Image (cartoon, rainbow, N blue to C red; front, side, top):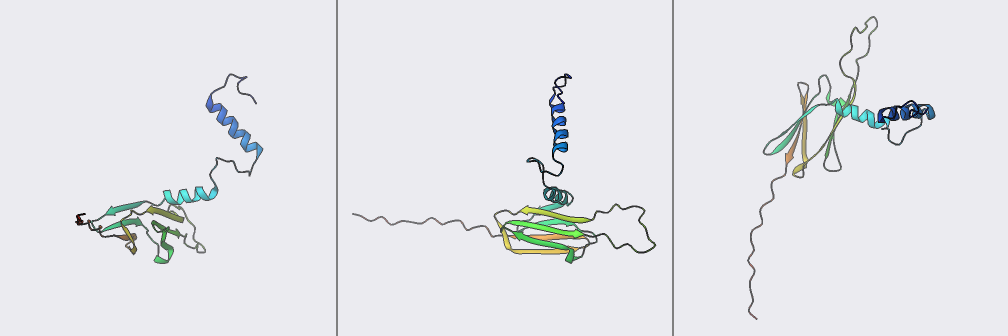
Length: 158
């Protein structure tokens, strides 16, 4: 259908028309601009995982709420020598016979956060502790480099 005939030449109608054509043409085909399902899943997992990051004189501390999770449900990994990856999965409790949920509001599913560590982070000194439902990941800082001392160069007489 040509919207110009009806006097509807706005970009909004053009976009809507294009979207309708794409849904009719190739149901199941990927469009070149559409995000993949994997990307959407990771984006949702990252958006749902809130974190606080603190900088201390000798370390960085990452705090993430993890209520009801055991240490086996949480992974703390280091990727590419400077990316801290915190991930895991919160599972729904098993349903018991004769019990039904009246309301289900707690989040379940996978979660993930990635943090690019600064250059002065000591990736060999990372520790993680989960206490009272809060995961605390501590990354120690490297000591600052010593300033170079001036060097005296002897002048030879020719």
